[in-house]
Length: 584
Image (cartoon, rainbow, N blue to C red; front, side, top):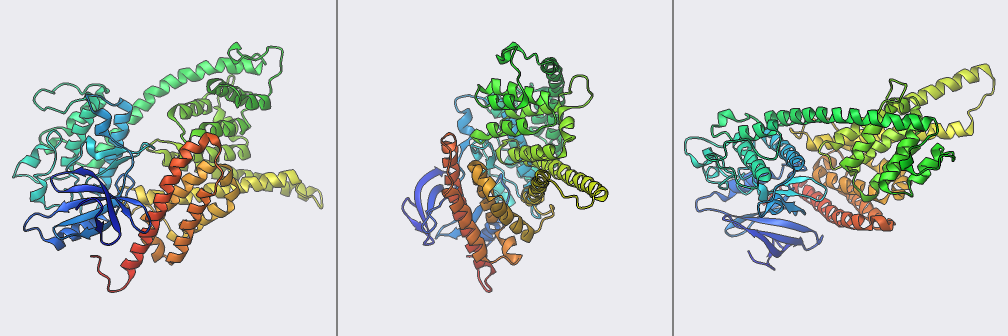
């Protein structure tokens, strides 16, 4: 293979991305869709059965998980087999730590959780898949924080060949012996060696590195050292066991941080009490003889510095806990850069969970008393987590807020209906005031939107559940819900181009992954391709404010690539569903 060569009449090799013992990896462009792909060449050793090899690689195409690059095609050349896969944009962890650098403990823990989630998925397959070469250079962190595990060149090989795969410093002892076979515990050893390197800045040495792992708490050090046991029986016996231990560590650390947050909440009580007396702290630079009401605080929060703005929003919430405007305005400001950061999330959590002076209720509980306001705020918080949070568990948190929004909206609708029925019974001809009718309509729209995202969440769980099959979902329902969001929420999405682009990108990726399910449910390729075009055109025509142009420009590039991938996935499914067709 060489640069400029055209494979299978549709992929032109642009440039070499890397080279290894098995072959090279090339950046390629699809001649029709003009989308970039990565093509990995796997040279076949003498005596290797080409058809068996292709069958194994074809099975790998069924791996559909967000932490894995999607394989979309398998090609054959005279002396090799080529995998056509997603071109992952990002930086390898090897590049991040080059020159003895280390990563923060928080980033390493996040990496451990994401890779372990991937191993849970691989382990749960009907025929478990071992990667056998986990190391920093095979872990790519995308700009949005998602880790991709790449280079499955050795995962398809027979067990005897697999033992010779791996990289010194990361390969488990059993990969050098003839009396044992690799399994998931082999990958857990490599993960432990990788985490050690990220924290210590050097490769693990079982002879000299007997002490605690540097730059991390004792419980994480113990976890890494257990992964690095020479005897596989002394390591975690499954990826799920490792995942449970990581969850336990995160919860323990969360409780410790919670103690600090309690102190922060107590500290906030004093300025809240002062606000109730209309005496605002001097740090807000508010005139002592001027009356600052809720609306003015929210309005001024948008024209001062970020730190001062948060103080203004907080004071508005303390002044009138039953209103949602301050929450909504704060979330809008926080989402301007497309990221709901840990700092922004912490401020929101501390504000919601603080206890009001003279009361035993939190500010979230006080807001909850106004069902309409709480439903609107909960929906927006859910959307911030869904689209903008870099947290690994952001979708699950978002779905929790959507549940709260839907429940609060249903209660508000029921309460209003009961009140209206009581009044109507006492006064013949009683009609619902226009203002109240508009308010109820808005609540109903919030409920429907929250319920739609809960159904979309079922699809997300299907894609990302460790088994890949357990989460219930309905392809036809997903298709209808997506259509409703794109049509009924069109005006709302156009007001927030960043959210529209993120929704479109996610929809395109979901269509790519689940194109087969969609077509088997009765949705034909013309409908799917029409939806793909609508998603792309909606993003290219949107007006982007100057402050968001840079982040939206990058998203638009991803959307163009995702739309081309979706079209190609649909074409592939059409070919597969034709009777009598052979894959190769």
